[in-house]
Amino acid sequence: MGIFGKKKSGTNNTQTPYNPYAAPNPSSTTNPSSGFANALNPGAAPPPAVYQPYQPSAPPASYDNSHSAPFVPGTSTMSTPGAGGPAPKKYVKINGVMKLNPEYQRWKDAQSGGGPPSTPASPEALSVVSNMDDHAQLNSDLGQDVPLAESTNATIEMMQEPEICLEAGMSADEMVDKLGSILAKYEVPLGLSNKLLMLTEFQSLDFIIDDSGSMQCTSDTVDPVTKQPNTRWKEAQSRLKDMLEVLAYVPFNQIKIEFLNRRTQVILTRQGRDPQSFLAEAHRQIDQAFSAGPSGTTPALEKLQESILAGQGKSIARYFFGDGMPNGGDFAQKEIIKILTHRQNPAGNPITFISCTNEDSQVEWMKGT
Image 1 (cartoon, rainbow, N blue to C red):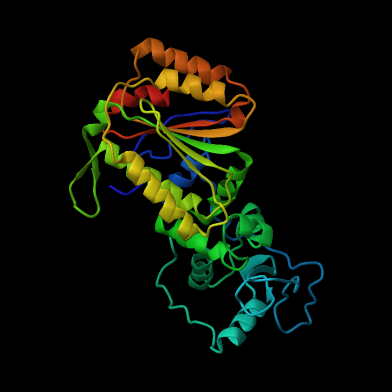
Image 2 (cartoon, rainbow, N blue to C red):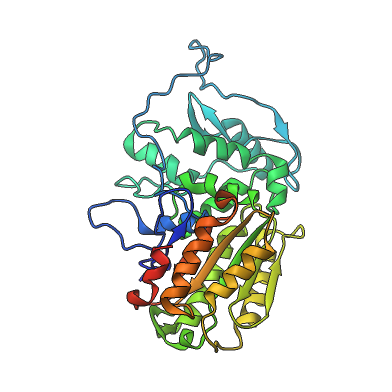
């Protein structure tokens, strides 16, 4: 099974619940892994189209048809650390389509002393457009310029702003491509990048991990290294680290990891580090927190009550990883639903439930919340 394959989760939000780990629809051409970005953006509706094919795009008002070269808007420059001088924006709209800026390519070639890299032709269009290279290949395969959605264009513009890039530990000509590489790894559509940037609206991203004894049981996932079945505990650890790999490439305020039984907490902040440095430290702390095996019961109701009370007046996105029924059975389930229904500012305090088991009957309550 893929990293973000058929796991179930429930959401409670003002929008229609979306299951980021639902089994793929055989009749759909959308890759199921695209649900990963929706898991990070809790309560999100099913992923929008990555691009809007065959949408006519009018040239900008300032475009003069007498020009022999394509119109390139805005040649304003920005400081790019370590690049040897000011650089034009890497991606700009050309005749209404977001593309690699020819001015940037010429600048880059001048810095490196080489010519532009060649892109091998692909016999068929890509099924998932995760980055600008995919989009360029799509245009080449189809023999026409396919404009991205306007929300995606706006996000790409934002990801080239020096202030935003600095918050993610990158320079202004790195963020679009580096995040795109991670999105491609997990086959997440580029169109969902705007939802990832929205995570800065939350003061904290809180991950609540079930550390009850049943998490020692075998999961239906397989360790990619040992090829042996994972325990549910190992699956939760792996999924958590995968999610943080994406978060490492976008701005965020704080990440908190806590558990149902033990009082251990992991608090992660950027502290000016680049994504690789941040991720190395985050993985070290996660591995240390998970080194002691799971034990105890499943006080999910009590933990959610504690978390929501402690977070009053704040905007917190919560992610609950679990494998079974909460202590108290049906009564606890109903109480959790009441808490979620009546909590203050649901849109500013979304909760996503992510199951770590193949026993669907034990986590049906998550889908009902």
